[in-house]
Image (cartoon, rainbow, N blue to C red; front, side, top):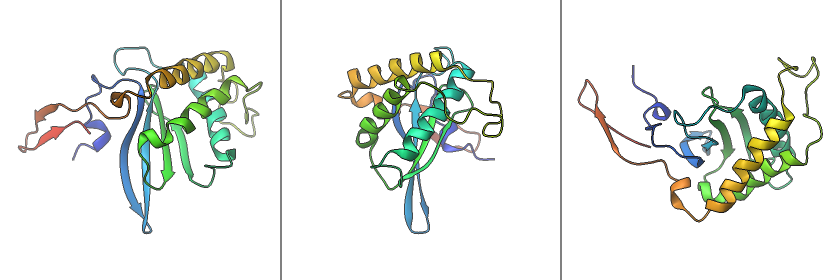
Length: 174
């Protein structure tokens, strides 16, 4: 089986940021998947699972209600490794173009008094939330993006040659 593109990126070199993970065609439209990376994989602890769950609920609600972007949002959800999220949007924009959207989404967490959709009928694990920790992670990441938004490395996957596969193909990050 071929290694999927997101597993061919060197995760030991990824830093927090906003990256274009892939672009696909769907019905004549471009769909872009963004890697919203909160922590350094394999170097920093993963995001607390209850905080990640709360961030998912709060930011998904924010994105689907934001008047400028709500019609462009397809998906917001956590990575299995708990180091970030995937954001899928209609269209083709650079990570820099969506930076303010991501900052605003994470800033909205601080204004949240209760996590939306946390009743048993709305959520598959309604007791697993941590709003206080979600606010800490959100503030930390929004501050980081604001402090580093002029640095190209938070918008581009690290590039370096990878190993040659058994069938002789070279893998490069991104």
